[in-house]
Length: 292
Image 1 (spheres, rainbow, N blue to C red):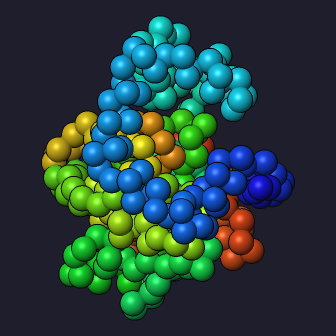
Image 2: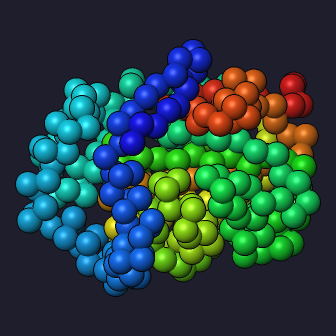
């Protein structure tokens, strides 16, 4: 199946996604959906995660690098003892320079980005399936504060860099975990399962000076053993690593309040035209509305 994105220069990028063909078979047929009841169970994902953290999984590394065309020169040298060690590999700092202008809103991760305005009781449609901010957070009072603001969906594919950073200096609340099932975050699944309600996820509120209170949600995916966040409540620093996803495609959602930021126009236009935008960790994707 051919997928299309746009880069920051407006070029259309096409990708032949064999993984999506398999997901169509799983989510698009009765036997496939029956199998998914087993595959999306927490115990199965934890077993798969355990295997990927064991030395027995090393054989998966080289074929994946070749199939995905990953340039390993971009990453810190390491000897990987398991597939998860490879999957959570660290990139060289110079390959992901962080825009340190405090009034520039930056991407927390490498991903495919879509941005939507949040209306009262909005249901955001992706491939004809939807979710609300209230159901994502399971907290109506918190969700209400973001009406009129932006919902940013950063979708990571398996060949993306799976570590993520803080977008600003400030303080953060503790991490709230919401249990669920590990569906894939691939858009194919959205036709059959409300994954942002069903998937295991974790969120925190980032209290920032230039962007107000930003909610960051990490969403787990099929065969992801853990969402690994490094810190509890306390001070945060722009560009510092916040955490990482173990094996699987995953998603980060950022919620920003009304009149706090101005999103870069190319990203808004791409979303309106049905394209996700390819962004890199640390790059500018908007700016503070209140310039100092």
